[in-house]
Length: 322
Ligand code: 8YV
Image (cartoon, rainbow, N blue to C red; front, top):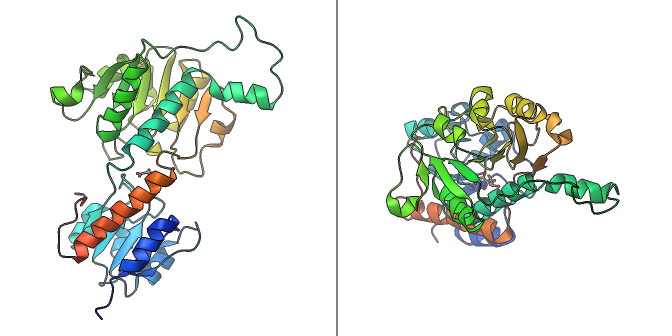
């Protein structure tokens, strides 16, 4: 019998995904959630044909040059691929794939949860219940703000940004966006295009970050651009933590320029800036964007579809470009 492609899977994946990959691959899987060190990953890649990695695996140029010659393809269990130096992989002729589309709705749902949670003071409300400080209902007690009628500024109007716009319209928000290129009318659906991020910030009551993390977008949300937001604005991030300058965001919130923040991603997660843990008006989640069973199964199956394509001699559907 022909031998199955040999696959290193760096993290524990959902059971249905691992059951499928065991049928098609000679898989070296990771039975825990532990993240491999670079040395461990390189050592376990020996003799393998493919890697299945996640954003916790820093597949940078230094690691890629150390990979054995047997590695012919890298599939990421994620839509974001800023953890992989795709140019370095291309230089070794190693295609890289991601898992777009299948996690768009789950992530857009978390963005709306954060928008609503931040705008309506959900963190303070839960704290009042848990701390038993809620003593009575009061006409002016714990007042927050409606999202109806507010301007939602979407920074990066790709699949997830457009799915967030679709949801936000149902909540009565008007949609503004900045994107490298303007969408066509069908995609735009009446949203207001802003040619620069600065113009978008100035027109946003709620700013929601949905761009990829690239050298151009890193620290795009910073002291200067935050100051362009109207006073009392809300900042939401479900994209990547390194697009936001933590110091600037925390100062803008503590200084009263921002009403609230809602975050699902952080710089250096899970080792987030400790000040986030005690901030008022911060609705914070631990990177739950795609964390539903249905979505994580779909991501795993999509990653395996890409690997199946490759080993069948087809161009993988979700090959990304450096
Ligand atoms: C998580 C994500 O990485 O897909 C992405 O880019 O950030 C999320 O889906 C996911 O938990 C995979 O590790």
